[in-house]
Image (cartoon, rainbow, N blue to C red; front, side, top):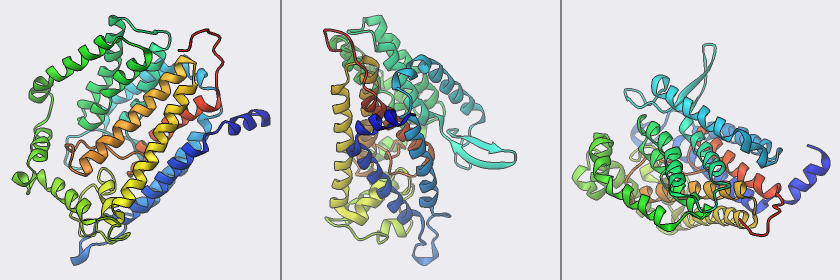
Length: 384
């Protein structure tokens, strides 16, 4: 990148957006440390390692990738979006055969990365598929202003294939994250409302089939436990109950960093990943939760502002897709932490521990920022 190009890039750089992202990452590392570095009373070891150190390493890598993404103009990405989509699809298939998961579990979600006999990391291809799907849908819809019905079907097929592969792992949370994406991008592309409503109704009508033939027994039990956690308090209802206790005990200002009882006494599982928001609410209270929500609102509003200023269709659709993904993931994760939604296993972007999740989130926001710093002049009388 030349000095002149670098100057133009940083002149258009959205510092508010990037600052909000870094603030969320800093908050995440702080509370990941709180959730994983201490031993509980009675000699209970909460977690074997301090995951905050590992998250910091992933942060350095992710921020580096973020700035690399800003170098080329985003329109250069269009030529290989479908190749990228197919490559990640292949990774999802490979994961079904060679993937790994928790011990004594049939789950296969991560591909181990090894150099010789050394394990470097475990990578989750479904996280990268979120970015690949946004790019593929944007490329397909970019010149289809008011898509025809067959083109709407093609959009849902593009989203449906990876969704089925992720369901096969099984990973219900990530699979359901793909569901709102085609609707949001079709609205942005100007699809007829009756087409969108038709697919929404068809999706709701297929819910009994999904329940009977797709959902695993433990996933059904999680849903039933969400409806009545105390009926299943010794099994799937345990996490719901402990999470609500953590949220409620935090009050307005919280118990203090590292002072959460549900955290320190090892009552709340997955507290450094899926349920980090419960730890934050217990230790920093409602005020801490509102700060985090405000930071996410800043990111979403900055993204919508970029979309509104972008006349080039591919860039605008990409930004809409990224905003849709982030907003859905935040809403679902916070909802399950406070008991308003069933547990689905989704992480909280930029805050929950997870290298694959953090890297994918930075890539997504990096592409969104690229659209802002490399505006494309569209020679057309009508805006997209």
